[in-house]
Image 1 (cartoon, helix red, strand yellow):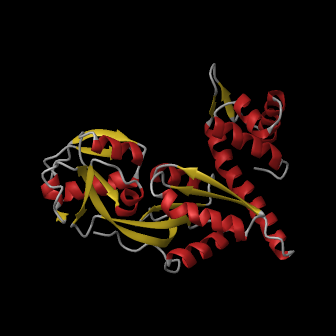
Image 2: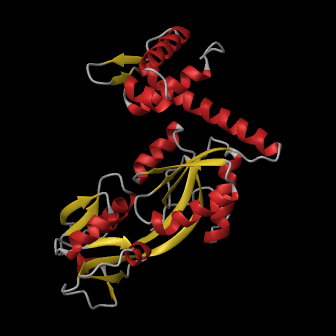
Image 3: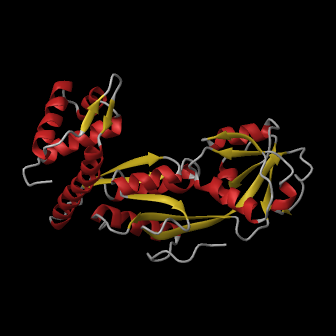
Length: 308
């Protein structure tokens, strides 16, 4: 990508790729659709290759477009880091921080942190992406977000900082045969149907791996992307669910009972992760400081051997 490529055109391409079309990108950027089209044509002229394939419905990136989008995300992030560093040098901490968080546990863990971060650094625009772990990891690799919360251990192309470890609980209807136990083994839960999260959630991987390691069959009754709906399905008697203790405690619902799962490899061990090949912005470093202060996280370290 030569020096003649304009950063504003790269930003337009990123928006087109993210929103999957010219009109949606135009809405995001508060410009006309013809302005978006013109920027993409200019960028294709500058690169000397077609980047976007126009389809009857939406667009599709060409192979060259995928490469440019990946590089453009890094360039735009670097520009934001530069502006943030210059602002900090002047004593005015400003910038934008994009953080990925899981769809469950966020209200308990991250809402207080987000509120405190805004109070301390009102000049930093904090953007939250709420998705499953696999999607957040891909967003990190693309440069769409700078940091994310994920289960330990993350893939080996990420640095990580431990946040907290929570026991996992079996959530079941209050009339379930195991409902009055103080703890249960996974083998005791195996005969019952389970309600899982959607594909791409790290907790699913943890659960299925634990079943596989013990050569137990996992019976699936349903899937959902929302913990409150999973709790409601358990209360309706559809099956058993496995959730972190703090999530269950924050969603007290009549008709269910939670029992501790007595398995050392079944804990919700969460960390903040970021790309090893990306320098963190001043805003991201402030976020890490806050996490360490409020949650007692350990210092940043490289990935160790997988747990369990």
